[in-house]
Each structure stands twice: as structure tokens, then as C-alpha cells.
Length: 116
Image (cartoon, rainbow, N blue to C red; front, side):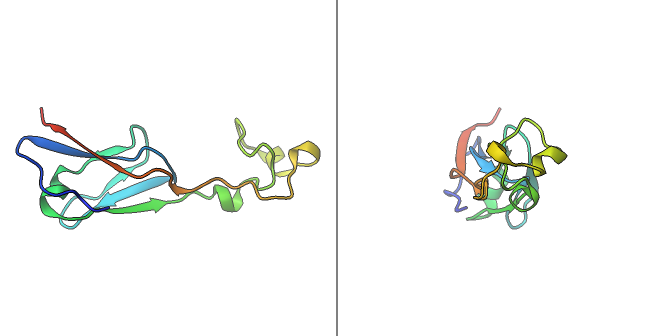
């Protein structure tokens, strides 16, 4: 992710991930702490990253849903999963794979504001 440049004195920057489908997202840049985004509000401070670097690395750690999940179950999203989800038939079966979109589903946002 390219960073927009240096911040004005007294300002902070936050990387926000509005929509993604992954287990976690690791964020880092040269000389700065590596952070994990894995729970709401899906954001992390990047003020130090912006002061030292021109870009930020994002590593998405995908889950196994599209590999080992109930791939033929209809509807594809259930309130819970257990053995019956893998033994489908009739109206609960689809010949087509029921895959979820994965990765960054919307572009990351860099928000800036005054530090407290």
C-alpha cells in the first residue's frame, strides 16, 4: 500500500480495512512494529510507518473455508457448522461450488487526524 507522505506535526494516521475476508491481516513496514488486524474495528495506527517509509506491506492470512468448508451446501452461509453441513442433498445441495470472495474486498483507507 503506497503511503501518501509525511504527516503534519501533531497528526496521526490510521490504516482502516473496510471490508476483507481472511483470518487475519498482518501489517508492517521497514523498521516499524509488525501488527495483526484480526478483530473489529479492523484498523491500526501507521503514524510511525508514514514517518519512515513510502509503502506499507499487508499480508492476508486466509482461512480454509473455500478449501475444506461445505462446498456444495445451499445456502452457503449457515448460522453454525457441524457434520450435517457436509452431508447435504435435495434442496440443500448445489452441483456448483459455493465459494466466498476472499482477500481485500474494498480498498484500504488511510485516515488522519489530530493526536490527543
